[in-house]
Amino acid sequence: MREIVLDTETTGLDPANGDKIVEIGCIELIDHMPSGEEFHRYINPQRDMPPGAEKVHGLSAKFLSDYDIFAASIDDFLGFIGSDPLIIHNAGFDMKFINAELKACGREILPMARAIDTLEMARRKFPGASASLDALCRRFEIDTSSRDKHGALIDSHLLSQVYLELIGGRQHGLVLAAEAQSGGGAGEATSGAGAAGSAPSLEGRASARTPRPHGPSAEEEVRHKAMLELLKSPLWTTG
Image (cartoon, rainbow, N blue to C red; front, side):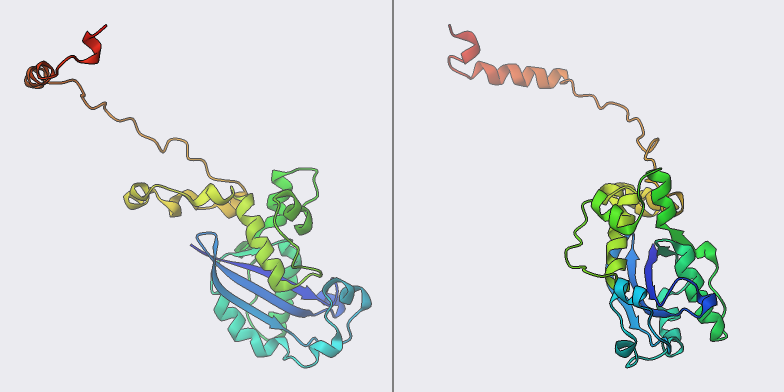
């Protein structure tokens, strides 16, 4: 099963006000685990960078001026994400920006049904608790020491670990080889896990087996008795 963890950094909060994507990062998951394949681009927004936004991600307008606009990377981006589910924290925000960029390029927008929102998953799993990416990393003891500011690619890597915990942790994908070969393996165990926001139940997987007979036959009892008679002073007859 292929999924794409995705994150963006922007100039602000709303593309309707002229805000733009300045960084996009994606990593590929196969059966919920990173495969090593990544997509990462810095993007020239062709506008100024508000100080508040630069404080969050550290990307200045001068730095971004050396990079291409979104349209230059659109085919590579769409090719990487394919038609697979998108794992996004606060999906409404990122999807709004991505679709604004796609629409500006005359491309078909991405349906929200493709997005699995880990923010909503966390709110359902831990009602009343903070569900920010930072808070979830602390809850699941995920190391964030290499991150001093928000970044699309590094946040995608952190989110992939958070997502794995939200769907049941690292033990979630462990199945017996025999079970997998019989058609009840990892694919069945994880189907729909992201949308549900919780680990799938394994209840009902085990089936009763008829006990195997372990009692000795008459011939085996005779042979066993003959063997015992060969022993000299066995412990159970001394004392």
